[in-house]
Image 1 (cartoon, helix red, strand yellow):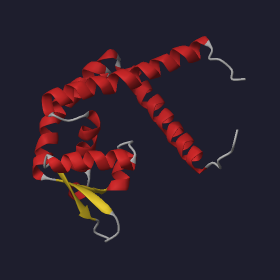
Image 2 (cartoon, helix red, strand yellow):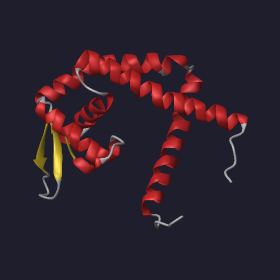
Image 3 (spheres, one colour):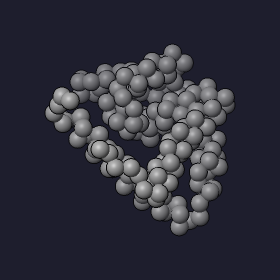
Image 4 (tube, helix red, strand yellow):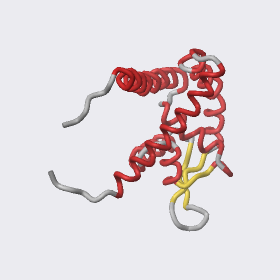
Length: 161
């Protein structure tokens, strides 16, 4: 039988669920309305903007963007259709890179100030400097734990019930 959550665990979990559901939804709405892109599409463009030569292997981009290869492939297809990215063979000849186009670079540069305003308004303005530091530490710790847990579950043997 599974043990229930105590009152502190319940509060913590409810806070995580609220943030996980409301922040991406608010960012998606704002970015769609103002710039014609989702939050995940913005994240892909921003990662490409930061990458050397504005290019990154699709598998690396999926991992850094916290999305599946399938989801990333759909997003890159959309970005290709609107002219913000293209696919090219990787320099090593093995694999495929996503490459940010000049119009994609212009779009992410245009959207970034509004994105940062939204990040501050939705989350960061609700915290003082100490709380921001605490959130950074807790968020990084939870992210590492989540990634480790997911990686372990992907390699765990399948058992029947």
